[in-house]
Image (cartoon, rainbow, N blue to C red; front, side, top):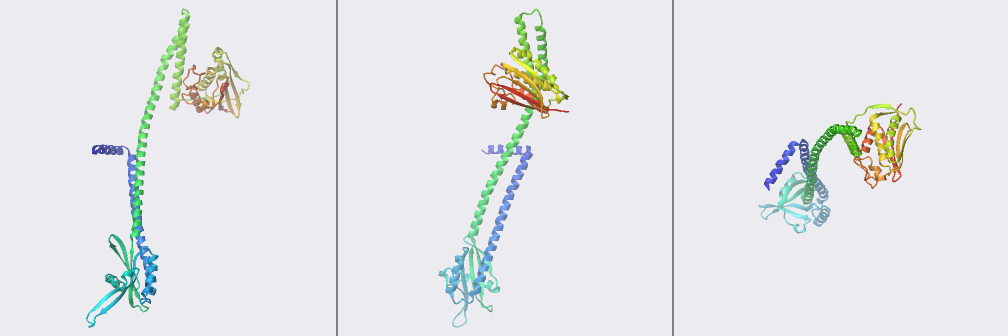
Length: 461
């Protein structure tokens, strides 16, 4: 058990020393806890002092009021008892309130004189007319300053008490007696004790909260370290993919070159030529996949370069549409480029090679996902933007499919698409290139009717 605690303690120390942020958190936690304890103790001390002063001021005021009439009523104990009872009933902290009269007793020979301090009125009726010699010291102090109350603090059986005495005088200043009050501080002590207990509970809660935040902060630092490692792994992955893709281009180019050369050889049998054509087709698809992977790597690393130039893209679009006439005829599709709305002033600032890649991808997808009907490409101007719309009469898509269409690796999975090959990267790459060239791409589609891909760029003068 102790070994486990020791190992975890050492582990925690090592983690603290290796993470300055955690040391800062620990220091802040200790300072917050210390400040809370200091403020709580300071508050309790101030509250305690204020409570004692309030009690003394209040009892002093009560005694001042009482002695103002008690001098004339020293011979009327019933009256004094009634007033004392009224005072005690309205002041919960007063434990004892009595009037003491100093009496000098002499014997018959006048040689022995004794002084007695008798209680003539009290809230405790049983002690009336009994001596209270314990108050002789206080009586002497009060006699030395008849105009002020004197208070001393006592402890009786663990209970804090304030005993206060004030002289009672006649109109000319002669001392007739004294009023003695005993106040209990138990209620104040209970209130302060409750405050201390509440403060301890709150302090415990604060400490638990700080520990939770500390552990949370520690976890965040662990996550940061993990994030850094993942970033490093991701960078290595991107570098590897980039390197591997580049290295694949060379053997693929050689395979395609030999396939092009071999399929033109006249001595080959038809079946052999068919094999070579399939090799060339597969190599072409693999080359396209490698190109897509390279583009993804460049885009994610921010290394895709663009060489912008001001052009009217109608001629490029026309060439691309013409190059797809044969693949379209193989599927009995009509493909056309509407030039009726093209103006000579429709210039946009784009990278030509990237623009070709975009149009090839969109027209190629239109043919791939259309089994019958037409493929139409239209170029037009609207609100100082040049639009190129690629429309088909293909399988179309639902609203849910349209929302996810430009996500990386997303492909529509239906019976109509199960035999169509693809990686789901083409449209993501297309959307990213359009965005980086300052354009936009949107889609309109109805399931079973067809789709319209609309690409737009701002027209430049």
